[in-house]
Length: 113
Image (cartoon, rainbow, N blue to C red):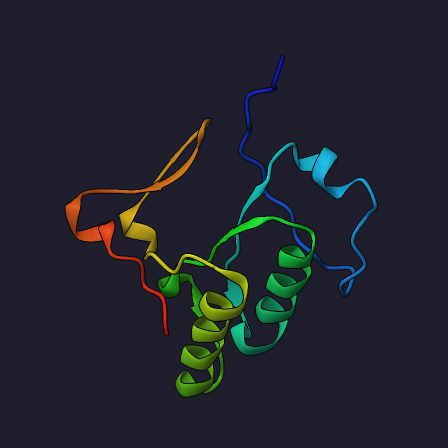
């Protein structure tokens, strides 16, 4: 019988070394990534997560970099390369069963190219 997903918070403060049982620890296949230095730390964590087959949500309004142009480029790359959904946090509906976009206006994904 499949387990019900549960919300949890995890910080990758070990410089990219993922525990081998990471997916089991979180009991999920979906990650919501937020943070500072989006063009570095978050971008590389997104890459690692993508390589481990996680579905990625990166709310565009929850990411910051020193240079706004670098931040935009990192968001565009996460969407293009890793399939990250960039829906803004105010348009997300979080529940025990997962993440989805709210309302009609959120139907268009914020993806590049």
